[in-house]
Length: 321
Image (cartoon, rainbow, N blue to C red; front, side):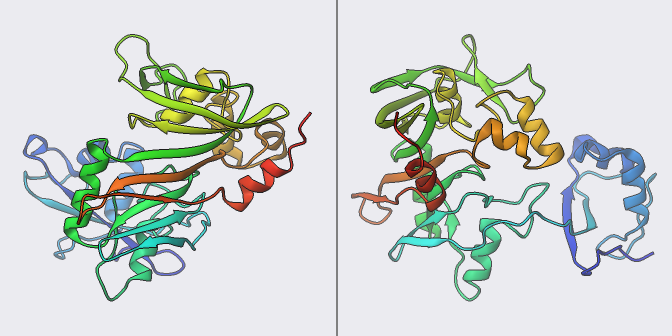
């Protein structure tokens, strides 16, 4: 039986290299180990609907071998729409900086394959070397991203981020009354209570050291515009730290009200109820400025970009009481 395609005929190729410790497992058991979100019955159905790259037919009961490459062809899923345009803020021979729009993921995930920044870069630079992202931003976070235009530049930029030689400044619109200025020093770790795998929390004992400098730029009504500069680079660090202060980022589904809102959003999508609770359909966090050592000269290089129109319009619409 040939591989099953979707309505467009598009297929995704997934390659898995069998580690020696998994040698001898049944193929369906091995795939369930590697792709636990799929049931065994779904995996068996998937195996029977396709063939290996080399032409040999796959059987669920076949035993896998160490070093063997398993190739799966799956129908390309229907992906959510994402913004597909981004502005280039800075460019020279080694470095490019873009203003990533909110809603655009960087790399492929279970939900996104074609609609990612990496895929868009391949489309935009079909003839030359594809720029390489030097760091990450959450999908809903907008703002500056650095990309290396040469292999050496990409390595140097990634090293600068890893060694904390890049100064990052974010703008966030928060609820509540943050301090005029301060330093948040709260260790973080995975949230073991909510059941949400991607959620982080303050972990007083055993958490990873996490520090964020904070400066309030302006206050309007029950909201404030703050500049946050992370000294460490933990997952969701700024959002967790601000929520821990009692000043969550507006629109934050994971940290602003209750974790259940995130699960509700995953289940139902954006709704009027979520609109009332969260106000904005994405969290109001923007990567505003970066200062980094240039890969060629080592000289400090600073770039910035303003709040995007959606956040600026929200801020301008707040009536100061």
